[in-house]
Image (cartoon, rainbow, N blue to C red):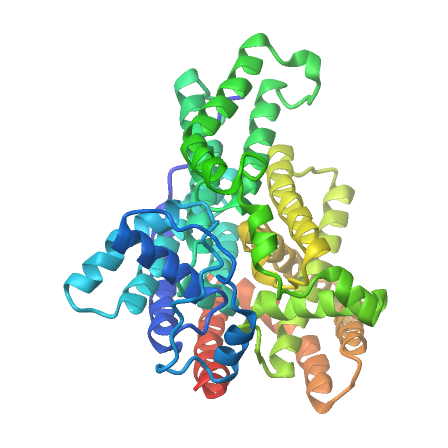
Length: 502
């Protein structure tokens, strides 16, 4: 099961450079323009960094670190400069690696009399640019050198408005994404060449993941899949696993726990040996948070399901500030239509492959599926306790999500091209398909406005036009699409976010 290295082609290198450059431009813009503290949990993350930088010690989560009423007052007043955020410290139980790495950046900014918050935000942009590069390299190998699909997926990762805003703020999420991308790169590039040394390296990386953010367990899941696939040579039968592989599995866990051990011991001494992750202390401190049980009792199951689906979708693409800045309904409709076309393309593409007798790469499909499934299950589990309908919690699996969306769009345009070749009959079928997609979308939108009708007509004309331009311009057409999405990011910042927060 030898893995090919798939070195980047010249075009792939330029496309990767373009993606990172556009992201850095947009991320820096969001970091500079977004008002102070107007990103979820940013004051608490900032105070964690500042505490380590000024005391040289890890903070301890205590009662009073989540002043719920005062926090609501700050949000309502839009965090005025005269009101301090020093008492907001409810992230103090989090794993410390990001904060340890960020603390020298904080001290450097202070030494040069720079704005510490802005410098830390720009540091987040730097971390995300590295994560994008690693994700691109990993995906390029996983997809066996398919430059176009890799670029489509990673371009979408870089340009989703909510993702741009989140990675331009002070939080540990951005370093968690970097660590997950690093594990993906390590695992995918290492396929077929595992050794004891590489296993120790994997255990070290997984331990560092856990020291960054607990949600990085998704990296452990797809790494376990990759090792299991290799140990069984794709058969997934336990009897095919040799003693050497069992020893390597155990070695990975032992090394990861060894990396994690100092923090666990610290927590045991601080919060008690029955609370090594500090989660029980967290539940005690954040008494003001709305629980799922309370919401369910007050509103019922249907209202909870509707709120979960709607808010998750909105906040995945863009719901800014502290979830208080909701975008114009028409922007969500555009993203909804985008997803619906991608989903239709996935279904039609799957059917095309079955008719042609071709198959997906089981390793790539399995790894991406485990990556997405485990992240989604974690998101659902968290929402069993608290009302946390925030799509950003799915961002650890943003890469497999965007691979699916990109492949769906690719297949949708292939189907449109095939129908165009059938002449008048094909055009009728094509119009029916496009109309059905748009009609379903308009029905899901509940209210059929003039904008809905415009979307209906636009998709019936737009998809065939895109298919035609794709034949004539090739991959250049996607550059136009991503340029449009980048302009949408700028529009959202200046016409949607800032007017609501300033």
